[in-house]
Length: 314
Image (cartoon, rainbow, N blue to C red; front, side, top):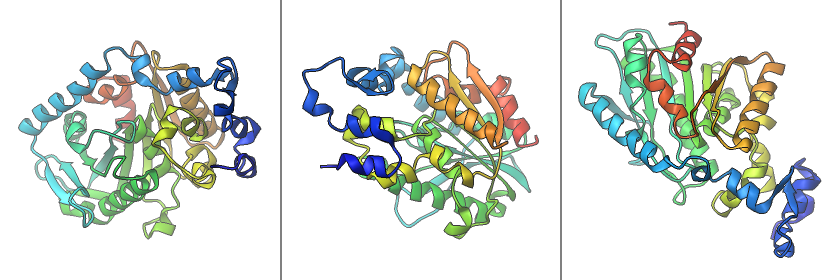
């Protein structure tokens, strides 16, 4: 059992600590557990299908679009680690040399999807004279959140160290991600890369789409059943708590049809980045729910795609 005092000690606040006792109030459906949310409201806020009735259709579309892209633009697959799952797909223009590199981290609530569902944006970047990389890693329950962070960090470090092998410029590596991949992207942007054996300025910018900057309400919600973290780890892997390490600009994007909690998370991350002069832009994708936001990168003419390419100076 987690001691409520641990959450106060680690700066998560008395409200977060109180929420840990919610099971003692199981009959009190009106009890507020976080901000103005009851437990059910908080659970719904982190259950995207409540807000996106077409979720399955859109998610299935990731795989179909990715397969079509791979047929027309076959990638080269490399290993960044010793496990079979530790690989990445590189999409590059013919004769690529010294091109900027965009690395993409897939979403899926930390439980599903892979690099094979993440090829959709490749034509946007390759067509603009850049390299697109979709990384793979192990999902839960076979993995943990710290394990995912470690795999993503090693994948990015590998890209930086090996960029010239596939025509990339190691001095122009960027990262993007959506949903839980948006969270992992924000973690990458707030990583002390020198402490992980990579150049301090490994990343030159990033795009956080519909991600989460603060994990405290996440582990208090229904997602806490599988995102199991200690109070110290909640702080360690909450980008909002690590922004002093951010050393490059970032775009933040979310859909206007997302849950109010996801809007709050992204808005507060954007505001905090702006306070530190690290915000490159904010995009509220009109008429898009949570699952649809990432598809903006599939269209070279979308506002988000144009801003992302501008961030990469292309």
